[in-house]
Length: 72
Image 1 (cartoon, rainbow, N blue to C red):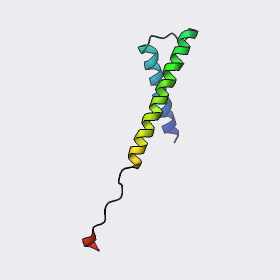
Image 2: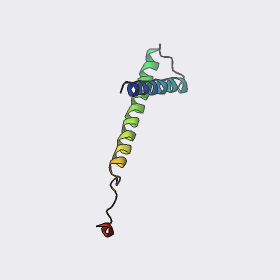
Image 3: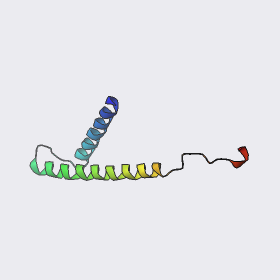
């Protein structure tokens, strides 16, 4: 469980770094901080929505094999 948390934190830090460099943001500047958090929170919301959709697709899959009446 601890490794999973570390992987999630690393993933979020890499995402934050990519956002900062892609938008050329200076984190020390107040306006750039607001822009960063707006973009980052939007990315997090989209990530959450995508995970929700993937989970719903996984749940809706047929995981139990069909029974064969000839084996009865």
